[in-house]
Length: 125
Image (cartoon, rainbow, N blue to C red; front, side, top):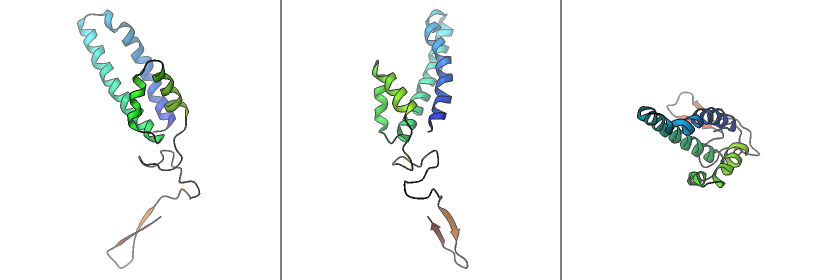
């Protein structure tokens, strides 16, 4: 996941959830239940987003646990997930979301072309 996409999701979610977290406990039971459900979905989506960003950085998804550590977690999220660029080219989690190829290679995508007069298919890289 690209940094741009990460921030386009993270900032609006932050601005929506901050009032819910600050004022959610002050309403009646229905408002509290609704805030709890909304925050649950937001938390689930944020963890999934952070894992995708860690994979773009070619880091283990288990590093998501660092985000739950006070003081260290927010710094880790801002620097590792929000500022640093992903690994250029494909990594062990998949292709580069920016479409960059391996260093030294052209970024020409593989093409599948059928051979003429045969039932087989060749893949050119």
